[in-house]
Length: 122
Image (cartoon, rainbow, N blue to C red; front, side, top):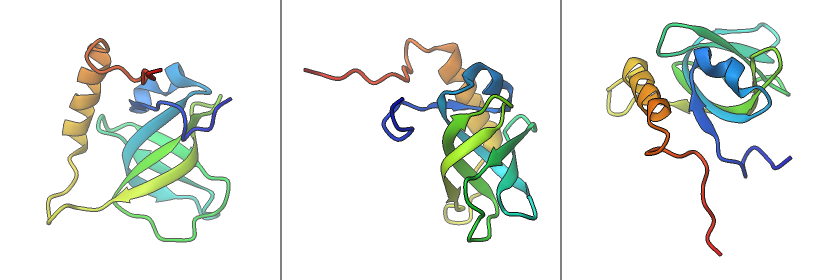
């Protein structure tokens, strides 16, 4: 299997997790809770639904706000993170998860205009 970095990653929300088991994805949500061990955390998506993110190593930094996770959806419909990025507010304007979620719906409703597979030229 190709590295999660080398594969196209579909942007999803919590309700789509079960459709992407064992596939690389990109997930964006607002941090709700970090497990005391630091090896997992919970994100709230733009629909107000929770998703659990599992890490291979404990966090070595404090997380807050909106987080983008790149990883693979596990059989338990949780995200096994390969990488994460904290999305900081842009000039005092908070990241709007509800608008982001509306964008996700459009992308998934019209896949012919927003393909996730990248064609390679030869």
